[in-house]
Structure formats: structure tokens, C-alpha cells
Length: 550
Image (cartoon, rainbow, N blue to C red):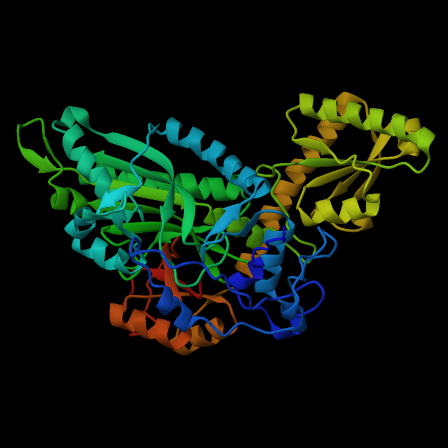
């Protein structure tokens, strides 16, 4: 039986031509899949027209899969995009799916998503929300009810026209988001002010037919949570929208060690169908912005379209005020691109699937049992303290190979145990965020209370260090501007530009066309004092942040 090899993840994004080495073989092979009957409305031709021609290399003629983990990742400093794809593949986070633009999330990548879920689930329930589930298939007529919603999502829809071998009476949309079907159900559940507020969340998959894809960052299908709430007043809905963006901000800072900037989107960047959109914006390692989470005040836009009404305390019929908010597997990509380095992935300890990797070392056969027994004892000690620990006791690889591999996988701490350590009752502890001798600590006692205290302290040090490092990087690449020329100069240098803004939507579009930058947000934290719009010279009430983005 022949071996079937999926295309490399590097097909998601065109690499630099100088990187066609033994570590990096872009392939021009394409799937030859039978065309599906018109069950899905797709934009494949448009996507192919936008795509650059595939690069050719000698390796593409007779492409063989790389030996498992036998090569380091492409340095981030050499080619950021190629590095990112290398990390996703070699750290075993995800693989390329057989349908163009899809990905398979592997166990290590999914474990990071599970850690995100675990934290957010607790916060959602603490703030009064309950989990539930809505169907994946949505009648097309639902999408058409809210004008701006259908206009915003129409290019990305996957539409089912055939089911069970027969043409459907009404087309079905594969869920791009759930505001429409949620409102359909709310009309059946809400009659009185006593039914409010109604606050739910679902963990689900979403399909959006993206033209250009990048694993975790932008894929045809992705995982997310989406919260939906209905309220009896505009003020209550606004408080909810702001509360949930604050939950996301705290998660980003405290768990992911990503110093996001929270703020309000411009009209042009507001979610289709929302009155206001709030966002957390993160600076990636290549200085591009990533929208890492959003919270929308939907006002009464959807409730009016679906006639979602309630009777208030005075017997008056009113439309409910609503919110929706979401974070997706895109956040996994944010963690990779914020903290990773030339060596590979670097995970914040609070989200790491493995916080400590133990590497036992022996040369002689009579040393093996004592070293392995000691390693197992250390593992049990750390597990008793709820530290996520693993022993790499495989004998097919050398200790040096294991060091490099687990560093590339981003495990925060490594513990080495050899015969001398067994004899002295101590271990060597190595930090992932501080490479070389500086990050090594020798002679750490195996005595349980001492070891547990030391390991927990180091994990907290790494968590704090990653946040501090990312904050310094972000702040050093934000430039305050007072003219359009200064903005263009800042953007051309790959930086974020921050300046007073009260110009029109047309002016905002001009900036986008001429610089490639968009308004990422109007930050909640605003400087005091009078301001003058750098575009028009008119008074401005607030500053905006402009940046190129994913």
C-alpha cells in the first residue's frame, strides 16, 4: 500500500524563496479531489485568482516527509511567517486538513485550547451565564432578516442546497455565527421582563469561507465560544458588553501573558449588525495587530428584525437589548506569535499542557534503574502539588535531542536528573524563557516541600517574565503621531500609530488604502487634555490606534 502524504502546512502561506532548504520544502502538489455537487456555495475560483503561483524547488519533484522532529524550526528572525508554520507543524499543534483552508488540531494544540476553555468556563458561570448549544444549520432566510448582517457575512457563507440526495426547499447556511438562530429561539423563550436577563454561552465550531488562510489565525472552520444575552434595558446590555470584554482582557493578561489593548472599534470595523463593538488588540512578534476577542452591543438591531419582544413592568411591549461576545482558537495563534522565539514555541505556564518535563540521564546500564526511579519519585511529588509534569524516558533519543525538542515545544521548565543528582539528592532546573547557562539552576533539593516551592516559584517567574517582555515589546513599537505624514512613517516602519482622530469614514478608508493600516480601536485608556485630529485639524475627543493586522 502506498503512503499518502498531506501537503505541508507551509502551503498555507508562501515562504521566502531563500528558505528552500532541507528543513523547508514547499510543494506545488495539489489535491485532485472530485468536485462536490452544488451542495456548497464557495468562492474557490476567487481564492485561486488571489493566490500566488506555487513555488518550485528540487524537493517538490520527489517530496518526502521530514524525519520526525529531526530539524530545528526556521528562525523567527529570518522569516516570521515560515517560522510560525514550522512551529505549528513541528510542535505538533495542528496539521493541514484535506479540504482547502481547514486544519486538524492535534492533541498538544487542543490541550492549549482546553486550558483556555477551563478558565473562561469558570468566569462565564461566575458572571451568570449558562452553557447550551444551538444547531449548526441555519435557514438562509434568517441571515437575510438583518440587512447589515447579511451584507457583512455573505461573501463568507457556506450554503447547503442538497440534503439526503434531494434539493432542499430552503437553503441552509453552515453556522458563521449564531445571532440569527439565537433570536429565533429567544422569541419563543421570552415573553415578560421576568424572563430577563437571559444569558447563555455555547462552545461550537464556525464556518467562514476565507480566501486566504493561516492555521489558527484564519481558517475555513474554527472553534470558539460565543455568548449571547438579552436584557430589559440598553444600559444593562452596555454593562454586559463591557463586562465581557474585561473578562477577555483579564484572561489575556493573567493567563496568556499577552498585554492586549482594550477599546471600541470604529464604525467601519464594527461587527455586522452591532451598534458597538469592543475589542482586545494584541501585538504579535512581527508587530502586526491581532483582534484577539470581541464583545458586541447589538442594541435592538436583531430583536427588531426577529420581533424578539417582552412585556415590561408597565405592560408595554418592548424589543430586547442584546449582546454577543466571542474568543476563538485564534488565541492559540496569538500565544505562538507573541511569545515564541528562534527556538520555537514558548508557552505561558498557566496555559501550558506540560509545565515541567523531566529528562532522566544515564550512560551505564547499572545507573538506569536508580535514575528512572528517582525521576518517577520527582514526578509524583510535583503531581501531588497539581503541577502538570511528564517524564521523557524514551530510549530512542539522546538527552540532547530531548532538550531541543521540549524547548521547541515550549515547555516552561525542564528538570534533569543524572546519577550524580541521584547521589546528591538534587536536580537541575532549566527555564525555557532564559536559554543557556543563565537559565540553569544546579543543586535544587529533591526534598518535596523545597522542590515544590521552587518549581512553583519558577513557573510564576516565567509567567511574569513573559508578560513583562511582551509589554516592553508592545510599548516600544507604538508611536504617538500628530500628523498624517507621521502616521505613514510609523506604519511604513511596521509600528503602531496612536493619535487624535475625529475624521470621517472616508478618511479612515483613505488611510487603509494608502498605508494598509486600519483603526484597531479607540482605547478605553485615553490621555487627558484637548486634542486635535491629525487628519483634519478639527477638535478630537479621543485617540485611535492604527496598525496593519492579521
